[in-house]
Image (cartoon, rainbow, N blue to C red; front, side):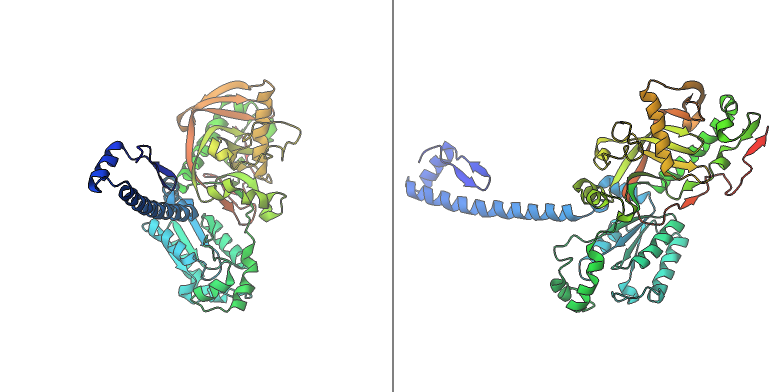
Length: 456
């Protein structure tokens, strides 16, 4: 038998050595057909073993790929542990929600709490949302929030009713929990014929078909973005406070108060001036208005967006800035973060100008009265636009401590602090599904104070 004999086993080609032929020849009395017979049996067995191993690995990889990042990605797990997250499992009865919910509970067993509609005997149905069916569940959920029993709360229910969901989004806002909505990726999740035999409620085919339309369409948020982990959010709020205090005490700032509505002889308390701050600090990626914005559904269906959802990311803050309208932080997006950054994000607010992709990325830290959060990104682009034209601002001071860096003035009340050292904060990529405009007073400020300018 030729030494170049090849055994084809799946994708692999084995070339037996001369030594192997010699030994096989001895074992079979030199009979070539016997050697071939042994090799054929060896080939067949090898193919079966390799096929089994490859199929098992492919199946395992497929299952791992179906799991959300918060279950399989180490950085995401670490970020979730530092965050306050309400996970809502959504889907038809029997689709695999409970299995997924228990997997999340087990992964975060020291910091999580699983609350199930099934345990409260709430039968999935198209119903009038009177709320009476959910009174005991909501009491349990409220107690969990108020007593801080868990930082990761998992709610297992069909979540097919929008009115019911709005109530949960309101609760999440009250207790400063970011929301992550997860659906099982099982092949039968929308197959009512299979679900009829799988759901423990013994819902009929007709009942399942009545529920399915409410769950077929993806639930789109007000916006997608990176939501800061609670621990890092608290740190950034303190840094924002320190930035405003030091900036307000700069002699150069006190001489340029007119854009803020104060005379130069007065003192401006910037913490009172910027009376509003987002409920949960975040960097918006895509504004969707619950699907009303053109292109929202296409954005949500992008593979990069699907893979990013519930994944942990580190955001890099390179500068802080203040204008008469907003105070914010400039975010330098990394290559993997730019994958979910819309190509038209800058054009949306400044269609006549051209900016590098990601230029608008920011965290709103506070706004003046009656100013919307979207203004912060516009203000940041104004700084970048001036820099592109060759204006770097006038260096008028230095800040120290956690906000160490050079302060530059760009006219019209625009102040920019280039940080000596970039700040890194953990975040989770998800969506904000609640009402727009939810805000809290800036740390150290009192909401509603109008007398912000005082005689020095």
